[in-house]
Length: 470
Ligand code: GDP
Image (tube, rainbow, N blue to C red; front, side, top):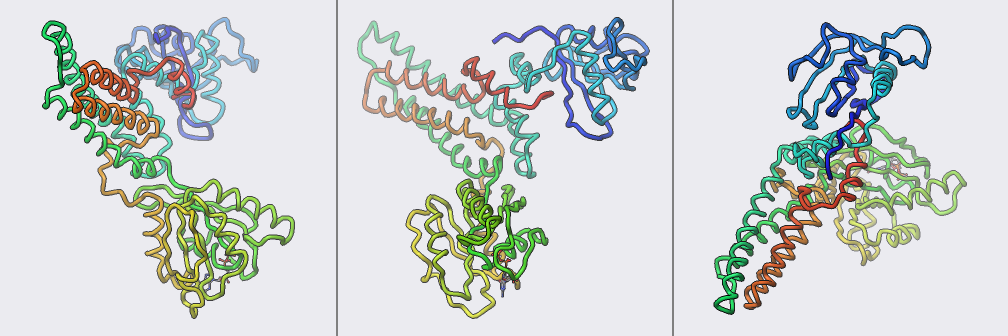
């Protein structure tokens, strides 16, 4: 895909009252477009690279202000001038810092569009940076991860990917695969003369070595992915077992209303906590009593949906009371989940124990913790177990160069499979062409992560998920 040569413009900051808002302009004719709107000491066309200029944004000459209030003046601004190729997009870029709030930047953008710029599509600045070779695809993805990061660990993961740590590691692995391929191809050419080839032992070892390193990289993926995407944890349990109390205890503040009446949490309440860098969304649900009043029934329905959408269920039981029919119904709804059973009210004489739990044959992971929301007994253990079930305990793995993005994980798994097939074929003394074919496949998969081997349509789709102004 060729970088286009038209001028694009968009507001790069979030809307709402703020000190500043920034309008970005990029393209070969960006300075001329900006000069139609900017009035400062001198035209920006003559400005040196990396300089800032104070002035006013005005309606371009000959263009009518649609608001028709007469004044051509739009805002007092500072223009930052970046000249190609030393800019975010590697094109000429002008960033106009306006006052914040909904109007100043909006009117300045409108003036730039009057002057010949086109409104940028979502992610188009970063797409241009990619097409002009300033960022690879993994780095472009890191820009999106960075602005969506909700924990410091997630932000650091994105920063390391933006700095190219993952890209360099994959580049190095690709080079090693490329060397093995070159050696095999040279032998194939030579074999036409002498007949019969096999893959030398050191090349097989080199292929297996890269495959092992990919295995190591992928081992950190579960934790890195939990850090990047966060985990949804839903509280399940019949009314009055202490769900809201535990929710609050985990949050450390009184967020949900706690009362002694059954069924008071009528709707979903969700809050964010963090365990070992993993953002965890705790969802408290309405009581699970079938029947009840209609409003509560809506809550029950929503609770079921919430459980369906969560990876981990925190199932709260009243340890001081016998199991009820509802507990068996709830147990049946936990199939396919990672389940943390909290035996709550452990400050009172125990009626239930671990042995009295209903069977949970289809859950993917199970932990049982004794806890008391009111006295705080066992809360630390509950948090640790929640961390384990949310994937927050693999934190020993270094986050630099970790693979967090499912697109990367999937491509690297295919690369590893191709390398394993290549090594297997070589060990069985199969023709060099077969080994070479698998190595080419592995190289293509590795290249997908950095975008070297990704199709045009995929690229368009990829960048359309970004924000406007990015
Ligand atoms: P929910 O309906 O499951 O959300 O339950 P709540 O959190 O509203 O709690 C119901 C009642 O049980 C309230 O009176 C709480 O104070 C009480 N409760 C909650 N946790 C405990 C606990 O660990 N020990 C004791 N003794 N009471 C608790």
